[in-house]
Amino acid sequence: MNKLDTIIIGAGISGLSYAWQLNKTQQDFLIVEKQESAGGNWHSFAYKNSIYELGPNSFVNRYPQFENLIDDIGFRDQVIIKAFKDSNRYIYLDEKLIEVKPGPGLLFSGLLSFKGILRALSEPLQGARLVSKDSEESVHSFFARHFGDEIAERIVANALQGVWAGDTKQLSIKACMPKLKEMEEKHGSILKALFMKSSKSKDSPKEPLLTCSFQKGLRSFCSGIQEKIGDKHFRFGAQSKICKLEADNFEIEINQEIFQCKNLVIATKAGEAAQLLENQQPNISTKLSSIYYAPVCLIAFSLKKDLFKKSAHKKMQAFGFISGKAEDLTLGTIFSSQVFDERELEDEYLMTSFLGGALNSQITEYDINKLIEKMCQELGEVFRDWTQTKLEVDDFQIIQSKFIPKAIPQYQANHNDLTSSIQEELKELPGLNLIGNYFAGVSMADSIKFAQKTMLD
Image: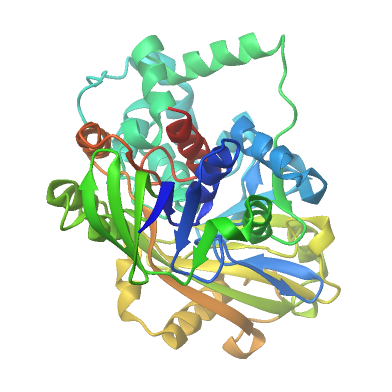
């Protein structure tokens, strides 16, 4: 029987981050991955001299754990950046693309009526009814209570599509935005709390907010971690089965070969973790199975630049747009070749659209050709004022698509209670850990932070 200190199931960013911390010790460990390489849902592809992502597309420079890992791996010279202020962002509302201004300018971007602006600015005077910190409240209800329905429906609901692909009427404010909930509990008014925070930060201003990626795409970073750790620690194309779960004594079958370890880390999606634990820990398995994931379809395509008006080319120097049109399947589009100067193409705009989400779960019933057709029709309307003529399906050069039936975990009502109860049950099995973006935030940085904290604890 093969004996190891630790086995990690899953070589996405969570598993890799845990493994990197483990690599600094003298322990013997193995990372088991069903795919043929590391990276999970991070998928980067070259198109001519550009890059598109069929998965996470970028990160920001505000997370020390991510920044430290970049330096540890020796990837600092691979980082490419674009200042937020130099990259427009749009919301498609009222049949037009509206530029979203950063900071306080957001209120005056044209997204809100005069009445909506007044309601938002009067938040400190409203005396918003406080909700007990122990009670559940949706993201929508929280923002509507503090700032009014327009903010909740026209700004927050659309903005969170780009992060969660979710329904703000179902997402939990405590789970998704815990810092805002803490601000309310401490100050009552969110605007008052933000003003106080801003006043304190004037003495120690932060560096400008940057959009970041890597020269060869995000997946290259995962490959970099894999290379640094060394292939001897990986088993790819492998199927895993848990045979025995006892404290500090676990038996795992990997491709019909039995391994024994003192520590087992499951770094998969919640549903896959549930399957692995189904026979040994049915209660934990049931809880994991209850975590809902929104489906997303990603479609990469290009459009010729000469299809657009001259006046539109400056507007296209942008990150992309989010769609606020409820009936559209297309949630938004990243302007992949325009986000970073290094990726701009000479005569084409390379883009990646994402469709579906929690509000459009019916995309699971569509075939890919139907989804592509819907996207083309919807984008034809979105870009109507920017193009020379109405875009037709044949104007879109489809490059690649990827359907992810369980893409992003949704932190719905009582999510914190659910994950806390799972962690409590895990205390009965020392050496067994679950990590992943269904625990402490869905961003790349959140996954890295949680994985490293779990390993160090």
